[in-house]
Every structure is written in C-alpha cells, then in structure tokens.
Length: 401
Image (tube, rainbow, N blue to C red; front, side, top):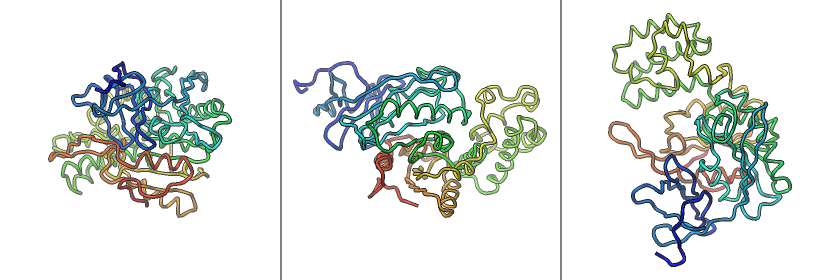
C-alpha cells in the first residue's frame, strides 16, 4: 500500500484521478456506495470492492490514490407551503457566472437524496452545480411523504428559488432535471421555477394508469405470453384504471367478474404493474368499504394529463430513455414526444439500448430475471452536456430519435 495513503472512515464526496476520471462516494443502504464516472458501481462492503477509503483520498484498485475534490457545499433549510425542507448546494471548484445550475426532482423512493444520491455528484464532477434536497417526508425534511405531483412541483419551485439565492452570481444557465417520477414533476414546475431548460431521465409522457397498463403488458411479454393473454390483461388494467380514477366506485363489479373469470389462469397471478396487482389481490368488498389506505394517503392526483402539461413547456427539453425499461416502458412516450416535436416544441430524445429503469445496464438470466450491473455509459455525459448548453457527439450506445 502506498505510504501516502492512510486508511480512514469513508466520507461522501468526489475523488478525482484526472480531468476525466473520478469516483463519487455516497451513503448506501449499508456502508458506502461508489459510482465511477464510467458508470461502474459498487459498495465498500462488497467482497472485492474496487476502492478503500482513506484520509482525504480513496485507494482505487489497491494502487491508485485519488484525492478528494474540495467542493463548495452549502446546507440550508427552506419553506414550501408551511413545510421546512432540507437542501444542499454543491459547486465544483471555480464555479462562476458561466457555470450551469440544476435542481433535481427525484423519483418515487421514500429515502432522502442528500449524501445518498449518485446523480448530483456525477453532474458536479462534470462541471455542473447542483442543488439537491430531501423530498417532504424523507431524509432531513419535514412533512409527510406524498406522490401528489402538484404538491411536489410546489416544492421543486421553492427549491429552485433557494438554489438561485445560494448560488447568486455563480451560475449561468438554470435548469430542472427529473428522473423517473421526477419526469412528471419537472414539467409542472418549469415555468414557475423560471428554468431555461429541462432534462428528463427514464421518465414518461403517459399518465399513471397508462404506465401501469404498459408495465403489466411488459411483465407478461417477458414471461413469454402472447397477444391473446396481453389482450385479456389489458381488459383487466382498463378496469383497475376506472377504479383508481373514480375513488374505487366505478368498476368494482367488473373487477369481481375478472377475478372469477381469470383467477385460476397462470398469468393472472403474475400481474404486478404499479397498482393493478394489489387491487387484484384484494376482495372487492374490502375495496368497496375501505379502498386502499396505503395508496390513498399518497394523495395521487389521477387526473393529471402529462401531454397537456408538456404542451405548456416553452423551453428546450431533453428526454433520455432506457429502451428496455420494464418499469417505465418508453414506446408510447417516444411517439408522443415525436408528435409534440412535430408541432414545434424543442424536444431532443435519446434512447439507450440494453438499459433498464434507473439507466442500469443488466445481465439477463434464462428465466428473464435481470441483475443490474453498471450505470449505462454515456447517460451522465449526456445530461451534463445538456445542462452546459448543447449535446454533441456519441453517448455510449445511445441513439437520437
């Protein structure tokens, strides 16, 4: 072990090898997670971990000492509709009036992002300043966890005001980036946040019920079922969509009928989707009496029409989609984005082959199960270049639509 390296407890941050290569350390579910700039991921507690933590440095591959980058970090608390949220501004050395600044809207996970999310550090390592915050009800923020998009958009607007206040005089272009569920939140907030651009990673231009239906169809296709079963499943998701949109009033008798009609068929028990699998596993009388309390407390606004929202976005949009996304199948989203672009909107779309949700590459077993491997090469480069003002060149295996 090199003399210059002294083992020490891990710290979150960026550790740089050279102008191109760096690694970000974040809190993981256990130990600390690491994400290299080329997309390689792991955990310091894994057998065969690629790095060891030290004082103000990490040791990579048992031989390379990568020093810690002196980021400017500003912790803050800010108010949104009476709730105090925790945020942090991350700035790379030398941030100034030409440095882009982005605020992230993260996905549906119930954990905070401060010190835990890899995306902000990957952007900062590429020269983009980032404001990251813990959603209401997560991490260090107050309030109750919710999936009410309008409320979350209000929080994103408040976060944008705080980001601009903290970075005053040290940023140029300002934008919003949303991943997964954040792809529904960002367009709702863009105008009020006065964002110059938006970027969406593995998000959707379909509503929640359409996502559920596409997810169910993809699940069954991946299990080898053909068009006849997919059509039956679509009749089921049509019913569950009516149920959730009506507050469990419209479609209860129809749900009971399909439970009896298809309940013993092998494909029926495989259905999960976003919510349909839960509804299929519940007695109709329980739904009639109690609904689904764990869904209801999330405050979902089932009336949201993402296409109508996107029509109001007047700034350039980038959509980076995972072509093999099982959780957010992209086919309908691509068609709708192409239609909006043909109507004059500034929309760029990149599809990453062999990538699943989270922009994760994967190894697929013979039974169709997948094991996530790396973050798909080129994804973070694409998002950073977009924030800087223009995409150019090749981004991994991605192709532009």
